[in-house]
Length: 400
Image 1: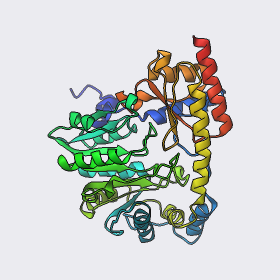
Image 2 (image 1 turned 135 degrees about the horizontal axis):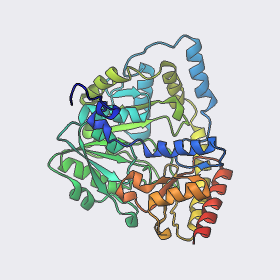
Image 3 (image 1 turned 60 degrees about the vertical axis):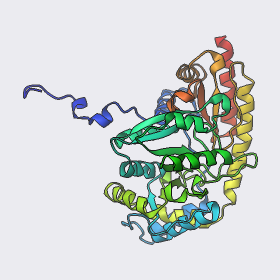
């Protein structure tokens, strides 16, 4: 470039960011907000924000901490009380043993924990297996860290089961990490015991580190239970568990998450954390202690409401010609099969926003294995969900 040529803003953008797409789920919500600002009555089912307010005792803990002057920097990896509470939660709920002061880093949200781990443990020349459909930020995180994300498509007609065949087809000599999520966002699948055993055997056979995203672990239906792959034989030493308080405690806006696991890995992540976030917000951490150590019954109450909505949404959508929607096994998303409409997932999402004024996320945003589906959050009010289903049915009926 000559001295007389003026650089454009894109010239200043780093190559690793220049072609990076914004978060598709946030883009859907932004578009819905824009239409609402224009006076259009849009029902936004594109995001993943519980419609319940954070319980009062958790809010009170943050207020009390602020009023007591807890508004300063704290230990970078998290206040000791919260790290101890997280370690105890992992022991009691999951059977996972970690060192509170060396095996936990508290972060501003679970997304930050995953991003820091990617920067600490993934680099150019490293391949990362991502079973798909997968949460929209896994692949960009890998790419920002300089690694190569290797899509590992799972079969929608086999209920997105994690199979050894799919894993062996995707693995490469450069594979170092595999990222999994159960209960899954976006499909709502919950790993069964044999799938976890397959994952554990595969990870050990190929000497892989497992990033296990367990953010939705407490949102389960039909008597299902959550088991962390970290508890299987030989897996504690090669599994990092990512979790947070956003979903189960209705604390999305508080931004509080964590990563836990073997100290040698956590110590590397802690370096990235100290140079980026510094620490999670002090008084929010006090609220986190209250959440983990206080009453838990409200979680079951929220799950009961989501269960009711889950069944209503899946049955309502399945009654619409061209759509099939099995009830989710966990989390609070319906992953509806729209292949019968003849539209791609992007076409379907655009059509539903334009004609039904219902915002959903196209399945292709979660990888090619999500094509032919759209994701709808049922973490919103019953009336809004019922109206959304009615609008979708009416719009598709007019299209035929």
